[in-house]
Amino acid sequence: MKHSFWLLSSCILTVYSCGQAEKEQASLDFSVQNESTILLTDKPVTINRSDLPLKDGEEGLYPIVISSEGDTIPAQLDDTDADGNWDELFMVADFAANEKRDFQLVWSEKEVDFPKRTSVRFGKREGADIPVHPALSDTLPADGLPKSVGYQPYQTDGPSWENDKVGFRHYFDGRNAKDLFGKKTSQMSPEDVGINSEGAVEDNYHVMEDWGRDILAVGNSVGLGGVALMVEGEPARLGVTVNDSINNVEESIFQIVEEGPVRSIIQYDYHNWQTHNRSYDVREVSTIWPGMSAYKNAVSVKGIRGDENLLIGLVNINNDQELSEIEVDDDWVVLLTHDQQTYEKQWWLGMALILPKAAYQGYTEAPKEGPLSNSYLAKLSVEENKAVEYYAVAGWELSDEQFADRDYFTNYVNSLVEQLDAEVKFTLTK
Image (cartoon, rainbow, N blue to C red):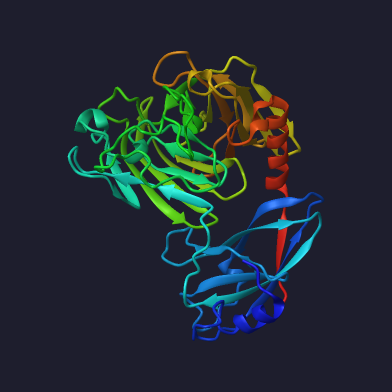
């Protein structure tokens, strides 16, 4: 949304809408400096609440961020610690190399309806004959699996999340694997994906639609970026397979932390995961923002004895090409595959894990058969209740025809690491 300077100046006093008599709020000026020598596109800018001097009356208002060029920058307030109060202002912006950009923040009594560039979809039903309804959270007990209750309780088998480039879904029905939606459009996919006209759960996303489709065969792997543990030298699956009726996790809790135009955050808590005569609690936090063909995941584990490795999965079904292990700068290691590794080997698909080098301990392969199979497994060191952060990337040729080329996809992942690694500096200027 563009505004001329004179219009911008007059509108700031009435907070975004000139014709609305809204309470006048003071403006706040700040700058963001790109401290790298590369062009940054859709670079996340996170501003802590403690860095913003809030005044009386500004609590409960909505942010309007305006650039010095007169563009309104979509921004949102996120409560990442679930205490009922927002703690971060989040936006994305473009920066030339070493560029410092100036912005103005004003507060609005009305929320601005920015175009959606991220989304979360989660629906459930309480019975086989009860229609699916949207939900913000759910708790799955050990005996609540489809095999034991007799029906699939979740739309798309669990939550799905996406940005303008790619979509993902998580099998919250006890399997805890991560699947992939290929997108052919930057628009968000329909809310009714995975349900039929009567509101019943239906697998209708394995056929091509205008927006795209599910493109990845997951099987008994943990998918793209799914989590497991190496315990006593054996891969241990967090959860079970589609053929099991009782989970090895006593209680699984899902919640949508935030769903906003430029960032969406979802969280899973797995309580009392029983494996190898041990008990673990695991937390996963998945985050997505616009512009990248990837999502960020953060995993922490309680109950660590010190002889475990965190395992991150890279499904290896329909892949006949070599795995690439690439060191990128001093901080990251990439595991990458590229092949026609979609259903029926129909399209080219590149997949990659961007892993912290400080925690990386190499990789192994899961067995060809069994409850955790057909997967490369990155091995990461893990400490008690300390989050490990990584990224899962997917490039489908129908999203970008150049992703059909392995070198192009590899260069994309390397460039993405540079983008993620680049730092920006926030400074209050007034």
